[in-house]
Image 1 (cartoon, rainbow, N blue to C red):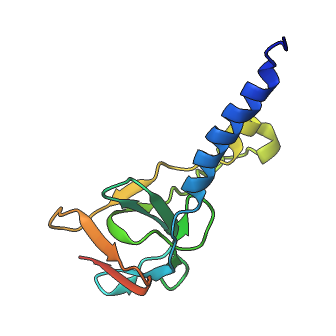
Image 2: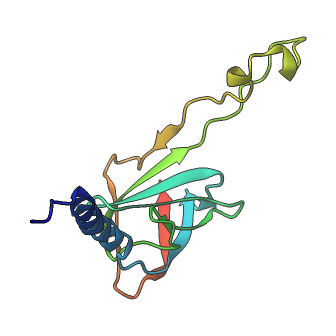
Length: 146
């Protein structure tokens, strides 16, 4: 009688688990980009997060000098999964200046590149921002904070 080989069981379980992880990376991702403005003016240097309302899937971007953004899915693909999203916008932290008379090498490394905290931005009516991305994608998402 042959002895049980645990290597086979380990390989089998690994393959099953890995195939489940790969299926998550196979999510349908479509192009998604647009512009963010505030009172009609481009909102630059902000971070935007799209969180899918039913699954929690996340896509994110940063705006450029014209307020434009292109979403990137958390799996690294450009775009977002089709669906309805709650949108969060954050003003990125600003660098904290060095104390007077100090050089960067005088400051401990973990404190050299500190920034102020990010600030969440919202609509003046405090309603949550929601956007729907179609099955074909959306390259003209317009968000105007009032």
